[in-house]
Image 1: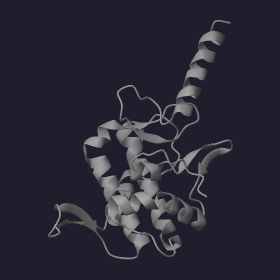
Image 2 (image 1 turned 90 degrees about the vertical axis):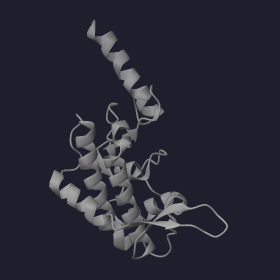
Image 3 (image 1 turned 180 degrees about the vertical axis):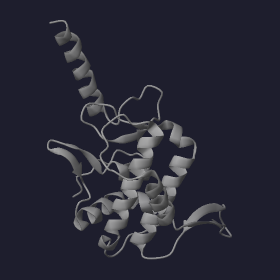
Image 4 (image 1 turned 180 degrees about the horizontal axis):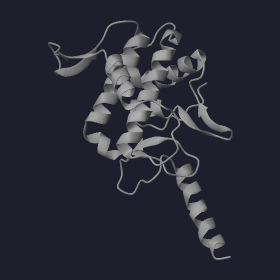
Length: 195
């Protein structure tokens, strides 16, 4: 079972959130190939619905690609959000851009069945796991290069390294738990600063 938080964010954000703060510092939920397989299995229903990618077989061969994509997305998201938190993953901007663009091996096609509505689908080659990585990279480009970039936020709750898309004007944190921690910290600081 994956140890990554799956919060219902866009898939590139879910991938970025596989790095989190732990009791002993930064925790990576994708350290081993089995972790990657588990995380891909956790998001498999969304991959099938959103990209038409049905994972079958072994996803371990894409583990390195997925981790590189995650690190590139985190570096670019930190820049896009002007993230003031300590850097969890060191990747130079040029390297992050090159990785993201190289892994987004997809093309848009129009599918129009005789008895249905036209739809835009993304196609790429390779195994289902390779297509999943390409789709995640393509979605990352859409996220960072589109209107959603303005809604992308770094969670500024204590000890949180996650990102989220601000889908409500009052949303300030990635989760209710982070919101509670931030409020407790503010309360503590107000009441102990007077002492």
